[in-house]
Image (cartoon, rainbow, N blue to C red; front, top):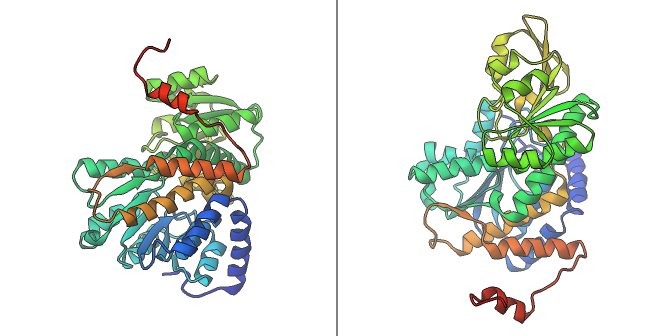
Length: 418
């Protein structure tokens, strides 16, 4: 099994420079890191983190280490690891078990290695770490104080576990913080998804018919950025409320069974399986491009596409061409995995600053609340969410108004407003 136990000095130096560059765009994490270095709120706490191994994650990892944490890191996606960053973190003394392009067997073995650290806190992105812990290493879960979850898909899985009575410790849904999903999901995913597709294909977006499957926060960002580049955006949905919102935001809305006949680029971001399926492949235009920005590579039914194809070849990095029996070609990007991390660098550091600030502060909160929370999925405490927002505004040198005491009294009163 290949990981970064053996140091690579040249690769590590490259990674350190990129980590430093990202850190310049993460002023909130920097402030938290400085406080953590003084106060050591995580002294001796063992943390196993399953996150995308990127420059932004590296700044979070270094912040946790400054807080005294004993941290081990593994990847939350086989294609999202930035190898130079992994090497740099090992050089900084943080064990990393991840390598870009690892197969599924190695991916899960790396998760097992992280669990062998016997964590007291877990940090997850997609809930693979937590799921593996509960299914295969349940005896270790009794020592876990709590955990955090970074993404929509993971929160859905964890809430299902909690409803089934299978969750054995409290987990904070960092994804649901306002300073996370309003910004990371919308602006971060929007920009980085378009960036990943552009890097993989070098297509011109202007005038192209782009089908975005789903209209949650991530899809809203994707649709907006595609529209901003001149694309003609079509939204598909199963929920009437976001579908109505998409209509009022100016997009064309239709079932995927219709959109598949006219679309040129298809982007999934729903968190569900087989969103684009066999019936859709069979009606797509020659040259259709498929990309996924959801956490797992299940949103596009790849086995069905494989079965339909008479041949397959890689025509560019991260671009696989499937030739169907009737001669049509369908292009799958990044093996159906997170295209923004498979073919690009993921979210800009500036937006991850808020997401990872929430992660750091929630881990600190969980350590302080040891034994006081029952096993369940919890929201980010409101004061943490607001504090992250305040720190970000301050870092941007932006001031806002405050309520007067008279205004506070008015808002707290039930009497007539006259």
